[in-house]
Image (cartoon, rainbow, N blue to C red; front, side, top):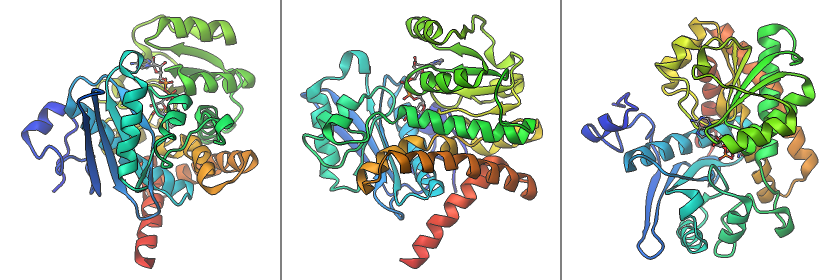
Length: 365
Ligand code: NAD
């Protein structure tokens, strides 16, 4: 039986790995440790039915190793469904490196990590995620071919973040169309939480559209930089979720829609880049539905990045990347409408399509 717990402390008392909701039948979990470089990483390979497990590497200073494990499991599982719903022949995987990317990410550590990736023989292919840059992937590429997100100078598709942001923008427009009857975001009040690589690029798209944008981040320097560049507002309050807004765009880390925030939330649409935005996808998905808040499933609308890195494996160009990313608009509309017809949450509607693609392939093989 799957245990419905997401609290890291509770996980230690029950089945800490196989019993986690996020474990969800992972094929393989690899713990990587290297004393010399200080590398402590976990690679999660959730499912390889559709192809090799592709997903980025996140470097983050987790409060505990349980948090890191829970994060990688949730993320790699999400990748399985993201690639499936996007129609890519990829499985789901992800890696986390425990540590502060600003102070602990050394070339030696990244190379050692690359060797661990290589030891999996292509079953897992890495890319960048939070705390990683294209240059880190270029470095990893010197020890393994099983890496994407390589710089354009080195023959890769480059930084995936602008494409991710464009896909989120497409998903947001579709959700707006569904909720407000128009996908024009001019004068819509949008709160972007987290203005890193993707958040900033989303702000650019939204600025071009004439939206009223508020930004928030834990990094004050970034806030000022993005405000000055796009003439947007920095949110100065301490109760973001309770603010009147049309659209909430979570672009920092996951689980910002949780037991505490969901009751306060005034947004009418949620559409953002962060992975695993719902702390508990079933429970919080249902509450959003009851509250008539349109949620554009994260793993559907943030697929631009994987579309971009997949181009490196399949050798398709920018035009095809844009075409596939723009299709997120149509898929989002289809899913929102399916959810309404079938009385399910939007997350469930997206999940069902992804799962059925995997099940069909499994039967064929
Ligand atoms: P990033 O590291 O460049 O940016 C994250 C930003 O969030 C940083 O500016 C950070 O200061 C801020 N932040 C962290 N905690 C915060 C908090 N509590 N409140 C407000 N801001 C906070 O990462 P990114 O590449 O922009 O990715 C953003 C999110 O989108 C992540 O969840 C990532 O997994 C997801 N995502 C990214 C891509 C991609 O192509 N980069 C693809 C799919 C999904």
